[in-house]
Image (cartoon, rainbow, N blue to C red; front, side):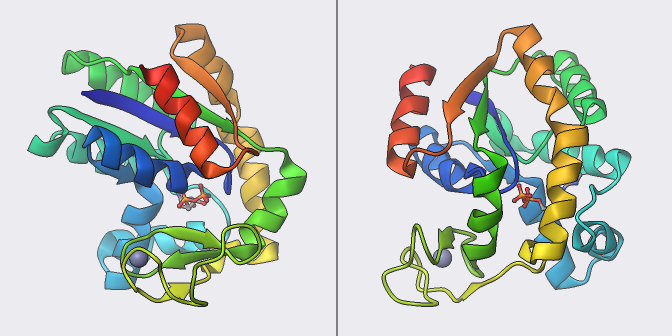
Length: 214
Ligand code: ADP
Ligand code: ZN
């Protein structure tokens, strides 16, 4: 049983840790970014709504995002826990989540905050490549796949996210500073926040997180 949130700036390594954590704790991985991207590629109504915000490095509106997450959390596979990745991203979303958990008799065990200095984030995002099939992420400089353009885990094709283009990255960082960074104090105040050094290598960070979860 694990009910956790992954917090941190874009490119902090949330997705990388998420894959390892859901494997170890056997809980569903709920990534709002993945949900939006899937809907965009399938051309659903949600995808059409979300696309313009994502491409501009802005957040998808709170009401819409909250509705998607709360209905996902009500699915059976979340009964024994979940890992939220990229949600909440605003105080509004955090309040909504809190209210939802209270109503359903649940509490967060931990909010995992990955910190990485903003200078490093820009180079991480520009080198990032994602697997089209399983969503695993790589970095052509720091964590390259064994074979160029091919996912180590599943053999899928690697691609660069459109919102990892330099123009959009600046806007995403601004959005993070203005809207998401305040969540660090929000969760510090409730005592569930645990800080991790996101500049360490992924295995070491994972070890630190597992040790803290206990
Ligand atoms: P990253 O953490 O690398 O920025 P994500 O995949 O989590 O990437 O998110 C990609 C984009 O999807 C965000 O820039 C934003 O536009 C949108 N998005 C994801 N999660 C949320 C959320 N909780 N609220 C609003 N928009 C979101
Ligand atoms: Zn893959």
